[in-house]
Length: 64
Image 1 (cartoon, rainbow, N blue to C red):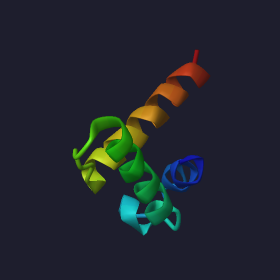
Image 2: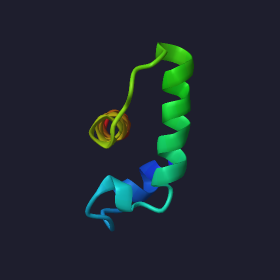
Image 3: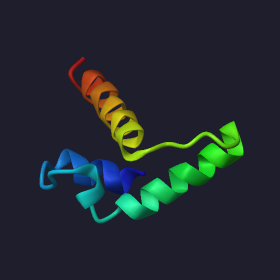
């Protein structure tokens, strides 16, 4: 997930799915959801929100 996070932070990509590591990160997260939550599905919007939230928390810690 760190690769896709760094790619997204670079602001080089218009959509999260444009990031080279998107498929790997998405597949990893989807597999985790199956293991953790059963049949719940995480779409691109949810994955983007999770990454953006992680970036926001990371930036908040850096600014303190």
